[in-house]
Length: 599
Image (cartoon, one colour):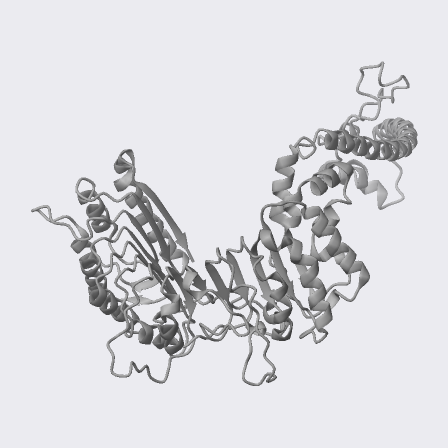
């Protein structure tokens, strides 16, 4: 008879295992909720259970077994019955364990719910204790006051549909409601209340006037006051309201250092109450909605309030013309700084009536610059959007503007707008210019193909000013004109090119390299900042910087590579690493190098 696999041995398990009834916190045995692994029934054992070759001829016939077969079959039946009994006993144990596990699972669920509730309480208590130890609680009052000052919005946005919440006009009203300590800091820091915004369209509301009066009282004896007067509902025609507001602000007039006006010209004459009182006024902003235009009423009152302001030196506008300030009479001979690019592209500008676009033409700007009343003007920042049809000097020479030391010209890099800057530079003589910035696009990254850089070089070559700082943004720079610029401005100390194409080539960098006889181009150059499509060899650039280290050393270098695509980025990173490694020894001599990549 052939040897058969033992069916019973294929179903081995620990018959003596029982779940431990003792407390698992006391007993260390592993029989609490852990059961020993039973062996899986092997495929051959499963086949032996289904059919046994020893008795196969008897299962298909009615023949009786022989004595030997009978004895073998009885032994096998007895063994299987005993095994079945053991399985039944083991099954009962496992069912008892399952019932116990289910009961413990319910207990665990309940315990988890209780722990979750306790955790919430602990988290809340921890948050309260940590809040007590918060650094914000221990900040000195003067530091809190500085933080509050940075949160103040001035000048206030002039929105068409103002909020009904008065707290919106000054965040300090909300700060004082946070806690007693914040309230004490806000109330006792009088300089925080010195930024006063007056919305004329709300002056008919008693609650708003009470709030305004309360702020004026809290401003106390602050040495410096900034005032913004505007209207969110268009032109106010009730002059009594404006006179009342001017009277309320009159005690602050001697301390006003900054005034921002976005009101109707019909309200301007109410400000005459401040005449001979603006002793500290330094900066004045006049909106284009505050001046007269041709289609406005014939009655044009005059505002003399600012004519007698002895310290007024900074005039800022967003007007369409450079010198139109009616109905305001200004001390033009003492203006040192002028700009007309406020609220450029701001959707809230001009009381929400669309984009506020300054569009001074070159003829108007040139007329104002050459006007004797602006003879003390030192710094000028002008946005130009349209070229003049023609600029005529009536047979005279190109006007000399001898006072301007800092000039910033801006326009949009689209269409023919750059012609406005070209036209202005071709028509002016600036012998004392020290800083020049030309920005072709405050908002766009496109580069405009123009002759503007050539016009810049022509203007500098013609006037030979002591130019020390030059910045050119968003344009194409011919390398040969760049070399020419360094020749006509040998005293250049700071040179910036932002988002440019071409410009710095290997040939141009070779021109900046110190020659063997010691001669060097731009010997005063100390700061070099360039960004854009940079294609020069970093080895040539490093050689240029190293050659100048003893004769005309650079103190600061800032390079930004514009790239497109991941492959190009990898090559630029390698160039960046090589350059940093080459220039690292020069850091001991004070050279600061900053390099970055931009997609």
